[in-house]
Every structure is written in C-alpha cells, then in structure tokens.
Length: 77
Image (tube, rainbow, N blue to C red; front, side):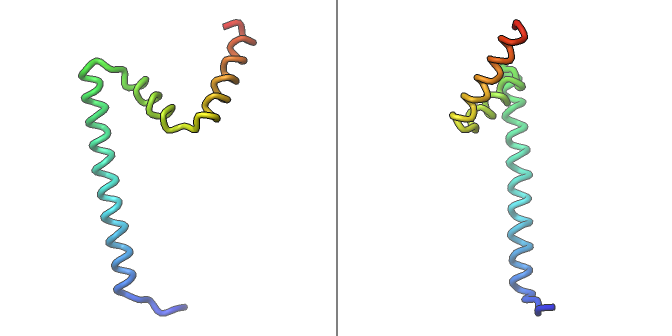
C-alpha cells in the first residue's frame, strides 16, 4: 500500500467539507427563495418545472414536447 501524505489528505478532506457546507447553505437558500415565491402567490411546482425546462437542452426539450404532444393526440386529449 502506498504511503499516505497526511497533509495532502487533510487538505482534500477539508476542501470537501467546505464544499459540502456550501452546498447545504445553497440548498437552504434555495428553499427560502421557493418559500418567498410561494408567499408572493407563485405556484412552486410550476416554478420548479420552469427551472427544469431552462436547464434542459433546447433540442432535447423540443423532441420531448413533440413526443408528449403525439401521445396526447393519440389518446384524444
């Protein structure tokens, strides 16, 4: 087994811990923003869908929407 560089290991662990704390903080901030949006009268479920759509690849999104539309037509919707 290779020799462990204690200082380097500690640096990696501390960096990961800082990032995990940052992520936790960002999740809390995001939750607070959704709560603010809900208090302002926005539908949080719809807002989450909009966020998902904005992150999507436009070509893939267009293809998915076309498939859903075809299925709806096939089902008489």
